[in-house]
Image (cartoon, rainbow, N blue to C red; front, side, top):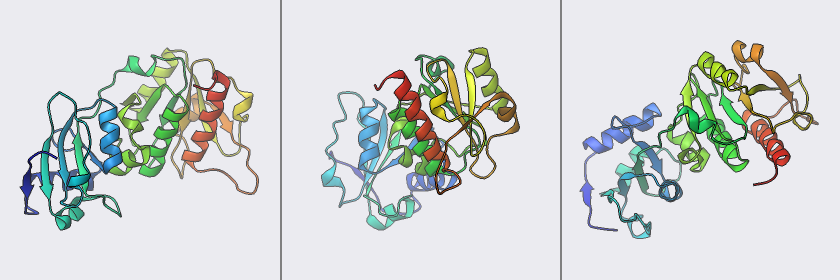
Amino acid sequence: MNAASSIQSAHNPLVREIRRAVARGGLTRGGLCVAEGFHLLEEALRSGLRIDTVLATERAAPELRADFGRGRKPRFVRIGESLFSGISATEHAQGVLALVEPPQWREQDLFARRAPLVVLDRVQDPGNAGTIARAAEAFGAAGILWVKGTVAQWNPKTLRASAGSLFRLPVIEAEAAEAAEMLQSRGAAIRITSPREGAPPWELDWRAPCALVIGNEAHGVGSEWARAGEPVRIPTAGVESLNAASAAAVVLYEAMRQRGAP
């Protein structure tokens, strides 16, 4: 690790800004996302994103082996263990945290490939949202429409659950009506997960333009999606239904199987 400045006070402006972003579950005022842990730092670099700042404790600093390339190097800051614990969003902190410039996507990026889109409709749990993003990348989805009312995309817990997939998967935020209109204008079939109604995913064609809507954990999809969409049911034995992330993974895997494994 290169020569670094150090932080000694909990009142340091950088510490306060990171603490604010973590508490609010979003970006810093400078538009940077908080990526905690060695894995997310490596994923950000692998995704070609700019790392603005890296904070590391004395314990973690010797383990930093990342190759930051030939471009603009991040600012390195050493921070005490107790101060780091005060800004960490994880139970077992690794002592390293990066401020990353998130990717910027456009509507056309969502439709660049012939693969299903995922729509997150007011999904509230950051673990669910992040895990769905990870499944979407793993099973070749084209991107995500992140409907307003869903947990923040750059909530540190959402990003951690995505294991870095949110650094690469095209994501556009939109109101529900705007998202539905976007899909309909592109001729995409809208399908909504349902615990009791609809055909199982293997009886539907996922090779044509389509979108899978994952609704709120407690209330399901909104009325605009229920009116516009075709229900998809995952038959289960012994349990009434799967949670949002598991249901999304099952359907997206079937969609990939029909298109051919990547």
